[in-house]
Image 1 (cartoon, rainbow, N blue to C red):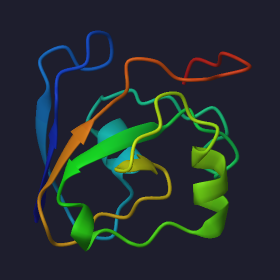
Image 2 (image 1 turned 90 degrees about the vertical axis):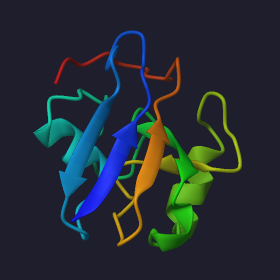
Image 3 (image 1 turned 180 degrees about the vertical axis):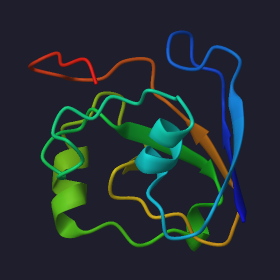
Length: 112
């Protein structure tokens, strides 16, 4: 099992969270299965940036970002070197520390 530590986020996860997940699942799916409501307007199809996260620790064990993901990340609010789309980022064997950005760019607000 891999541990994912979500740092506190004012609205989505005020207390932060520690999850135990099996490698091979996306960060977005792991969060959603544990009641951390990361926005995912495109239904996790790599067509928006609403599930953008920062991988603060453990990024070395994640799958490599595709060119499509990198292109979309260029449009994300608050892009940083450790930015990833959580729907495209597959958990590996190393524990992770994840920060959810304060803002997201969503042209159509959808409640999931």
